Amino acid sequence: MIELLEASRTYRKGSDEIRALDGVSLSISRGEFVAVMGPSGSGKSTLMNLLGLLDTADSGTYRLDGKDVQTLSADQRATVRNERIGFVFQAFHLLARTTAVENVELPLVYSERRPADGLGLKALARVGLTDRATHLPNELSGGQQQRVAIARALVQEPDLILADEPTGNLDQASGGEILEIFRSLNQGGTTVVVITHDREVARYADRILSMVDGRIVADSAVLLQEAAAR
Image (cartoon, rainbow, N blue to C red; front, side, top):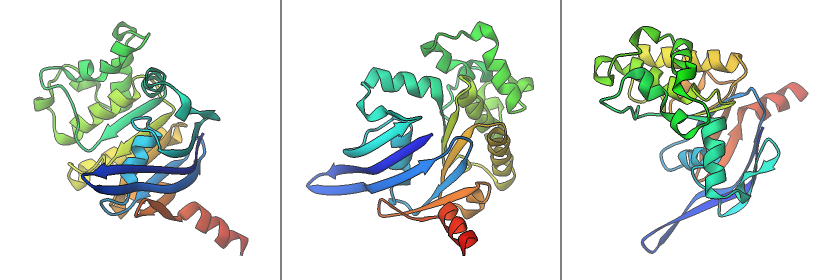
């Protein structure tokens, strides 16, 4: 589903040049649950932005289902993002004066689908929150707000979920509930990529990529395959 070949991304900070990604190559198959781990500044969030078409590489190739998405225009990338990729972030990014179901339906504004189709309530049902559909964010717990954010990511029924530190603002119990939702989505066929620095979060994944200084330095799937071959 995802194929990166020698992808690099460099930023400038004043006179300094920061190489956030340094020749990263990786493949992720449809239906995988992958965790990307690494310390702050390792490049993991830059990698997520690249995979989610929020940014483009300076060099290298990114193919999504075999299509080179690096060559798409900004509008074309936006269409792919909206229709195929769901994003979940550490901050919930909910509109304060908008109900849970209205927050969930926001991506439909840029879609051919319409809220009247009941997609917002359907997405809330997938995260067990239909009983809070008309509540405002300040009437919800942190865990419930993140579940609304996940429902918003699901409303277009994407085949790829990208989550950046999704449990970072939650207590351990709420974080566990969120990770169980991701596990359930993955078992239903959705490809899930979680960016985290927390090994307990990474344990929910089937494969762990470790990043240091803009490079992938370990891949648990490769290590398991090598161990099986021996």
